[in-house]
Length: 95
Image 1 (spheres, rainbow, N blue to C red):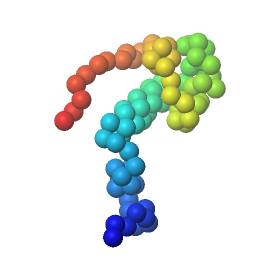
Image 2 (cartoon, helix red, strand yellow):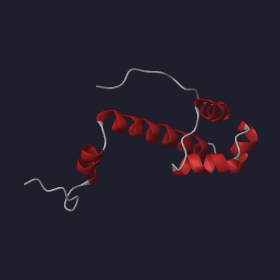
Image 3 (tube, rainbow, N blue to C red):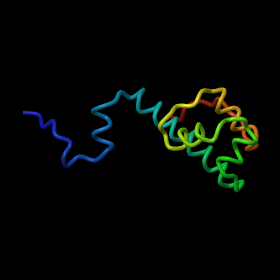
Image 4 (cartoon, rainbow, N blue to C red):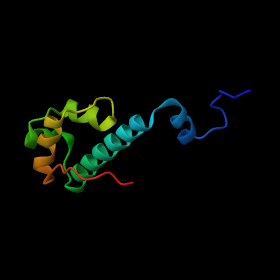
């Protein structure tokens, strides 16, 4: 009999049972993108409010994106990247 309990399993094992490979890859990409945006903002010593002033993206939108409670559009990401001196690049996935 298969044990369907998550008790005693680590998050990676549970995640593989709950989500498809594509869903996991999408989640990893989203986390990496948001992490890079947060790091770029912090490296430049900018508050979310200052980034709002530079990008035109409202501070509450930035906060929700950074908390992971919303998924930003490509347009929003591009507006945020420009004042951070960054650009979006399409590169092959690592195998």
